[in-house]
Image 1 (cartoon, rainbow, N blue to C red):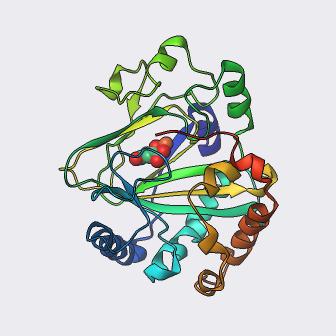
Image 2: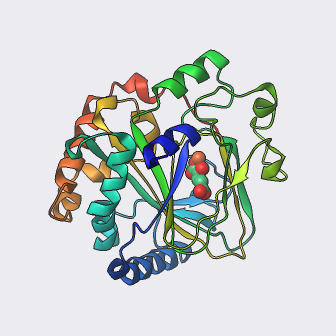
Length: 290
Ligand SMILES: O=C(O)CCC(=O)C(=O)O
Ligand SMILES: [Fe+2]
């Protein structure tokens, strides 16, 4: 089966080799710098322990993610260069079945291990609330075709668990019960769930509405690039999910000036068109609670 067929069937596919050998050291040292900056309290855009979705509680001292790696204040050019690199975008275009001109710039974050204690995210779908009716869940799943999310691990990563195939089917009674607010005791209690183990340099592309959860071990080093790209043929179907992260900085001249040659400018323009045309009621349709 080809990559796209596998992705469509399972809801995820693992692809190696999307960080070129000559990019690796630069990207890894940039990750190390932003991790230190975040843990030392000098980067406010972070995912904090205790919060599953934005807005993240700014008071918790420990972090499980660094937000907005492409933000101009970080001055780390390697992130936007990698995010718009030909090898990565080829994979994205193949999975979305779209042309370069359809690509919409979205998020690039870094997922890291907490240091004070372990943390976990409960079973969820990123853009469908846990209490959605079966009908709404089916509508949400059917419409969620215009973007792809991925995790690219710099170090072995065994944090993410998914139920293969669950990106197409509303939850069963049992899946609903196990995804209603509680942190799982063990993710493998969920029937048919698997751990998506990534080796260094491997990426998993996944439908972010697949039923998934994550477990963060404070003793195991994690630096996993976590991005997503949209397809403008989806209109503003992704607006709520993307814009909840606070992307007004992407509209300013400081960010535009950092963009490399290539498709980056067009991808940003596509994001801004969506941003500016999204009706406010679209943004408030669901409010995902922590
Ligand atoms: O840590 C991960 O790999 C998954 C994160 C996640 O599911 C989320 O941020 O919604
Ligand atoms: Fe998620």
